Length: 117
Image (tube, rainbow, N blue to C red):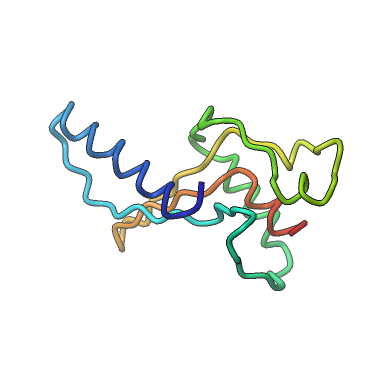
């Protein structure tokens, strides 16, 4: 799934929860870091320590587990036979920006994408 598809999935889940429990969520969903092999993506350097901070952030608090198993398409396409743990995932993280009313969603593999691809 790409960023747009993830946002649509989360918006659908939010609408279902609102109907079921009657509580409106005013946060706008913004998905980041969901890559698909046939779509272009930005590459470049990141600040020193960024990936480690991202990993720490991902593993703190609540993690949305079992969002469907995913193997890194880029590694598979490059002929990698045995995927590392970092190249496999079934979870994502949600972080809320209270000030701007944005809920950021990103996959566990985001650090792998940054480091390897």
